[in-house]
Amino acid sequence: MASEDVMIKIDSLTKSFGRIKALNDLNLEIGRGELLGIIGSNGAGKTTTIRIICCILKPDSGDVLVDGHSIQIDPIKIKSMIGYLPEEPNLYERFKARELLRYFAELYGVPKGEIESRIEELLELVGMSDRADDKINTFSKGLRQRVGIARALIHDPPIIIFDEPTMGLDPATANTIRGFIRKLKGKKTIILCTHYMDEAESLCDRVAIVNKGQIIDIGTPEYLESKVHGDIILKVRVNNPQSIDTNKIKNICSVDALSIDGNEFSVSLNSRKDISQIVDVFGEEVVSVNTKEPTLEDVFINTVK
Ligand SMILES: Nc1ncnc2c1ncn2[C@@H]1O[C@H](COP(=O)(O)OP(=O)(O)O)[C@@H](O)[C@H]1O
Ligand SMILES: [Mg+2]
Image (cartoon, rainbow, N blue to C red; front, side):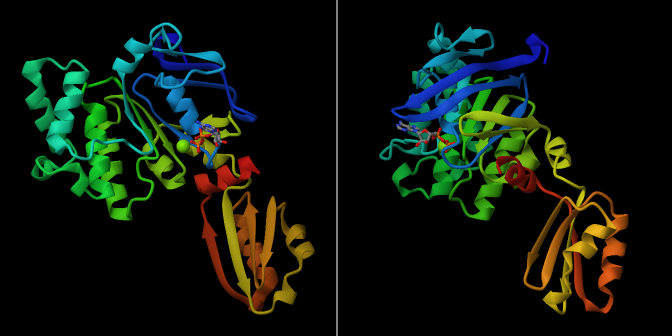
């Protein structure tokens, strides 16, 4: 990436908590206007990375440059450039939604004359104009996330960071939240931490896979999918499990991965033309045949293993 296209440059971050090495030489560049997904299992180091970018936590070594400003030198400037939705936003429960947004608008120095119109605009964006004057302690988790997003956007920052924004939400509400993120895509530089593969696949320009405090792979969802061994996964169910002869299957084609579960077996194939050959071998034994395109989940599981 050309340096003028880089919005956030993460350089050799390390961070330990006691004996736990949370980040182990983590490097990452996020482009201007990019929506970058960070995927990894629990404890991989996603939240630690984000908290360092947001200047909430100091690294043991390494640096982050946000639009050229170093977290070591310009934390105040960087904080003004980032809107952050934490994993568990600490919303002031006794405030009404509108009051909370007004409080943060003043805190972030939004010009007085713009505050009310800004609040209206954000309430509209997150679809909660009708609940603006209700207290936050009466809100469901989904409504709280909406307030949290509005709060993160209140000072109109060029960068937004979402940490697991749909975790614990029902599928419909999660989709609504994804819709808000989609509306921001292209207008802001966005980091989305998630452990939902389909979420990353459907929203992100690029996805970084983090494991044990390091980025182990990064690319477009298409690139990561193409890294799965083979282009297609074939699942065959047969009558008699004893008819599954692994040598027979291996004779037909080079299979990258073969797994057998009772009277069903799965193979990862490089070519669709191998499907009919395999099915032919089992002839009348075949009960059903299914094919599946690899998903990011397949990539992710393969990579982490
Ligand atoms: N404040 C802390 N004190 C001690 N250990 C921590 C703290 N924050 C994170 N960790 C540890 O650091 C590792 C990375 O955590 P985290 O960045 O929260 O991962 P993720 O967000 O990917 O689930 C984990 O092993 C976690 O237990
Ligand atoms: Mg986390």
